[in-house]
Amino acid sequence: MTRGKSITWTENILRQQADDAFCFRQNPGTYRSKSEFFLDEDGLMYKRSSKGNHQLVVPATLTRKVVRQNHDPVYGARYIAHLDIKKTYDLIAVRYWLSGVRKTIGSNVKNCSRCQRTPNIED
Image (cartoon, rainbow, N blue to C red; front, side, top):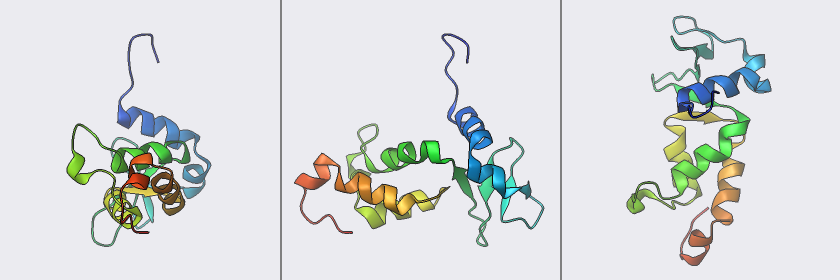
């Protein structure tokens, strides 16, 4: 990264996928292949879904960031922020595949000070 130039989310995912042990072991195919994991035209790895809603594979180094982005308030969108564990998982699972995500979500929600002050946070 050059000084003063920030990298995009896509560039960050690509870099992290290249260094991630799980991603390295998958030997992904192309989109047209029948492989469970495949690379798109940008080189991003996805987990294939039978329903066509393929999930971007998030490397372990970015798991917490994705969980926080989908649980904590973003841009004043309080109406979708601070969801319980199941709802946070459901929101993430639409777009992303993350190893160990349920455990990370549970830890994040249980350690979220706002969630602990709010009654009826369901597991």
